[in-house]
Length: 180
Image 1 (tube, rainbow, N blue to C red):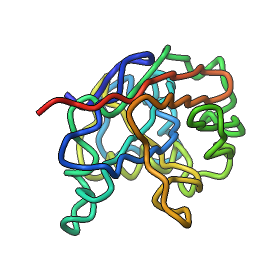
Image 2: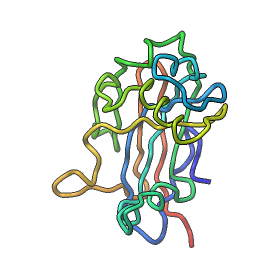
Image 3: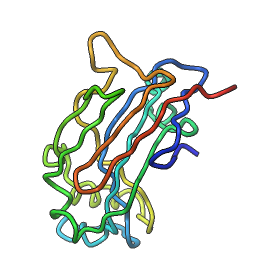
Image 4: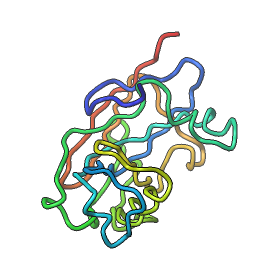
């Protein structure tokens, strides 16, 4: 229930005002894989898309486990298309990634700066679980999230969040207040 489309509204939960953005490259798994070696990991990638791992920060930090802040209903836009690996550099490396709020750039980086590249991430995850076709892996966000700013900045109803990954596409989502 947390995943929404590339142009759907993001719902701010009524229990929090700390809704934050996280522009991310998303990897779509193409075939089942378990204990995948790093050198073969890209063979398991069906393609790439854009995601914003919108996070309810105060709920993320309620416990040591981040899950509750990452899974609120209608908060994670994904899309607008699946771009196959042959259309991008290996591992989708070297692509500009950005996020803006109401036209103000909040994040601007490059996928070459990921802490863990796609191959390493796929190999690592496959040591924990069997990856299945259609699984979505979010690769991490660059600096510039609202909670990391001084003062902190969070999304408000009516704001437009635009997330872009070069060569893949753009998400354009309006923030609305969810009704209890």
